[in-house]
Image (cartoon, rainbow, N blue to C red; front, top):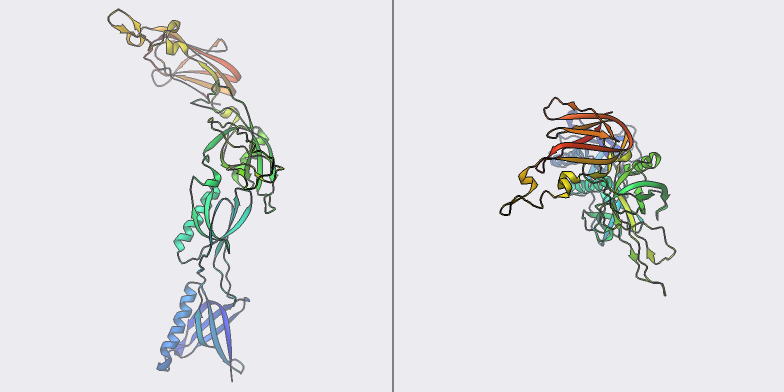
Length: 461
């Protein structure tokens, strides 16, 4: 008497021997393997198509690494083979249909990709990516991205968008099935309502402190950076404009496992200047307001470009208010004085170069007769001119490179420097070992308004 069994597993091997004997090796869910037979492919023409179809189903399942379910019979005697009576191919593709779609704007905190090979009777599981995101109110959400939907290219593109957003620290708009938290769509949009439009704001300054913060999920993925702003550099040579500036403290949030956090650690340890790009999460009041409590305005520190940036506040005692939060999307660590190879110019004076002697502007008009007024630029009258710069230098050997017409002199703190001719005609060099704040003067004997003052300063050692 034959015993009927049903088995599920993955096809590991198919062997076709003499007399049309097919031996199929099946890997079961518990890790055990067993052999099953399809007998006599060459015999019994009435059942030839049936046996050949079974072989085709098993071969295709092995090719795509998909599980199968077989029904086999076995005679009740020792050594009797298991004969395949029925073969069913089972797909692991995800074919679920979304019912209730919600929109979620969030930052990507972590991405994990899983492959679950199983052949259990409870059903197959597709390969998935677990996406951990943090919303604007600092709530952690766990989303699932199916990687084996029938549209494989779509799943691959969605995963790549998520990975790029995590690396760049930019927010994404997720379309999620609210029932099972599965991602149906991903969108990149610079005008996400919850995160505002100032994602390109840049701050210059220094790191004052680093601390950890727990999210709603109880994890310490985020760090708080106490950042004090500083006036930005502008122009070539790290020039600081002499305009009023008031430093302000800004609390920034950064992912602890990101490269940006490591840069902040280095900036705090070595007291280095930093430039960061921030993204402001819109704050605001909830629908309910406590009675007698007025809406208090929030101060916004000035950014390096002059635009206001909402500062991240500490959690408020008022449960009806949600603080504004500033996320870090990029960080740049700068050398002391912002550059190890060039000085920082605090002030530059070149009045005689631009306005001529005695304050006459080159473009204001100096009449030579009552009929045809001409400027100094038209007349090209030579006069002595002076360029003066006050700058801070890192300790090292600096080279002053000039491309100026006619003779000139250079001095540092009143001491003249020797000028050397370069291999290229017209170029001259001067060298000095400097460190700290110094006054540099360049005197040109014969200067005219139509000439250009070309000088470059950089450290060679």
